[in-house]
Amino acid sequence: MKRLCLAILLYTASTTASAAGLPAGVKQPHLEIDLSDKESLQRGARTFINYCLSCHSAAYMRYNRMAKDLGIDEESLRDNLLFVTDKVGDVMKAAMPAEDAKLWFGTAPPDLTVVARSRGPEWLYLYMTGFYREGSRWNNIVFPNVAMPHVLYEWQGEQRAVFETMEDGSKQFDHFEVVRPGSMKKEEYDAAIRELVNFLVYMGEPARLVRYRIGVYVLIFLGIFLIFTYLLKREYWKQLH
Image (cartoon, rainbow, N blue to C red):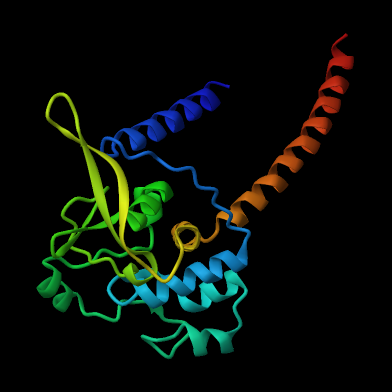
């Protein structure tokens, strides 16, 4: 019981800390991650491979493992998702060499295999929906002065961040204003980002659903074992009385 209470306190503290780490005025969204929705994961994988894998690697994930988990046959994998390599057993390496990326962007793009575990799905969602134009460059509401350009701007369009001046002179984020609409409506873009985040969460721990399933079997076993243990205990105590 003490361990359960401690786990709940640690989770609450981490959630509160994550929300507190956001800039003033930015609200933490609620995301429902569903790793059993294979169609959503497939669409998220397609977005990741087409738009993220050009610069970012996922060096701890193999194409064939992803295809097996998400229900993608090898022919579809080869035709639609293998752009950097022709071997389904290869890991997901970025198309851009790290040296070139560092030269062009000032820093090498990080590997994204476990980014959802380090940053959290809510932060990733805010990051991918929080790009805005600031003069001739892109900025981000949760990652100020980020070196990464907005690779999905054609989907989202261009927006401008509106800040509110507080009594102490500091500025607080208020809302976004659309400067130029993209090819997707806001609801469509948000849904696409949720699916991308869903895939990133899967990639951070591909065996999560298997772990959950094994956990159910373990609990069932322990429940049955408890019955036999109790009956055995009664037999022992009969001999003592």
